[in-house]
Amino acid sequence: MTQEELFKKLVAHSKEYGFIFQSSEIYDGLAAVYDYGQMGVELKNNLKRYWWESMVRLHQNIVGIDASIFMHPRTWEASGHVGAFNDPLIDNKDSKKRYRADVLIEEHAAKIDDKIDKEVEKARKRFGEAFDETQFRSTNARVLELQTRRDSVIERMNAALNASDFDALRQVIIDEEIADPVSGTRNWTEVRQFNLMFDTRIGAAADGASTIYLRPETAQGIFVNFLNVQKTGRMKIPFGIAQIGKAFRNEIVARQFIFRMREFEQMEMQFFVQPGSEMEWYEAWRTARMKWHRALGFGDGNYRFHEHEKLAHYANAACDIEYKFPFGFKEVEGIHSRTDFDLGQHEKFSGRKMRYHDPETGESYIPYVVETSIGVDRMVLQVLSAAYREEALDNGEERVVMAIPPALAPVKVAVLPLVKKDGLPEIAQEIVRTLRYDYALQYDEKDSIGKRYRRQDAIGTPLCVTVDHQTAEDGTVTVRYRDTMSQSRVPIAELHTLVGRETGMRGLLEKQM
Ligand code: GAP
Image 1 (cartoon, rainbow, N blue to C red):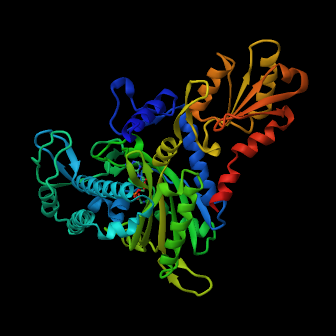
Image 2: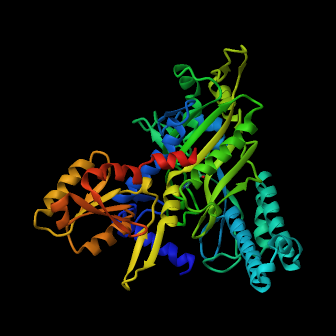
Image 3: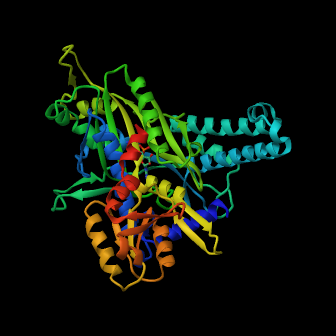
């Protein structure tokens, strides 16, 4: 199965089992907007809990807030979003499709990367055990030629973006002969700027109403509350403020399912530090955040750092954590050293002091900020992509199993009476009553036990508890494990502890510390 086929299957599976639906589907949907179904919302909530507990509960010096989506319009002038939150757009005159010029170029560069990888793989097969990849990459003429071309494309793109030189950006597309993936032609318009913020009106009367924006990031809600939290929480630098909430961007390139949406959710943490110490904290948060991802067990090799060559207007260092999705390595989280840009700007625009008074040194200063910013929806996609498996069973059947980390699984345990008679449903219901206060569970008595196992595999339930005739005699049940399909006999009295041990968040949180 190709990665493209796998991804199509994943999208279909997500819908079929209630993880993710297209928004307003009965009206043919709304592009790049999605709804979470009954399973998706549980998975998403568990992911948010994993992040929140790792940030807020396990750090004495990080607290949370929940700021509004609407903010005073001056916020976005101060942050630079009104002036600089733009995408460079280009249209193909034949297909009438619109693209982000930088994305077209990046995708073109990624194709050159693929060609390099193919050369490497060919050589690996040819040389077998003796193959030295580093040496091959640094000496093979074809690879070097491709690498030089790729680097030059990215370098030219970054220079054009940094200088806001849209003619130069277009020229990269022309020189590289990049074609529209839809029409296949190179009939391009000029490159234009497009602001990504959604605006709306606040207030009832048309003349008294004013334009406000739907926030394009949650971070600004943290910056404007910096002093409120610092003072009321008696926080001492270094300290962090964490927040989970919706953000909105009028994305033009809206593809790859929930990877790039117009309404999405972010989990952001701003860490306020003494000026001059930001690089130390930047390094520390890079390491901590990578550990958080890798603790999920999806394979260390499926993550990598991508250092930003083009820094945003507010940053003096920045990188992304990328995950290997079925459509390639893509950003899931950004770690940015934002200097004192945001607090400094808010001080300037609001006329209020945004300074920290150090009680020990008597010094007063605008703190520097290291930010970690991760998309909830991209995390959901990461988990779904990593978890989806098709397996051939010994009896000739097939199963689709979602190997979701148990702590994140929407349903922790399914309670299944083997048959719908002989008092077995009553015993199963009694088990449900003892477990339901602590664990998300399902009771299912319909269809054969095999079919019920398949249904639970498809939503990623880590444990199935089967009540059979032996249960009525000796008070034991069968516990079936999702990934291995192995079964063991367990006394009912031990179930509560077992489910907690196998599916609790604690193990995951300990791993990422
Ligand atoms: N406050 C900094 C900030 O917003 P960003 O790199 O623009 O930085 C951070 O966004 C994260 O938010 C990204 O790594 C990604 O996971 C998520 N994100 C951004 N735009 C998104 C979109 N259109 N759809 C889904 N997730 C998005």
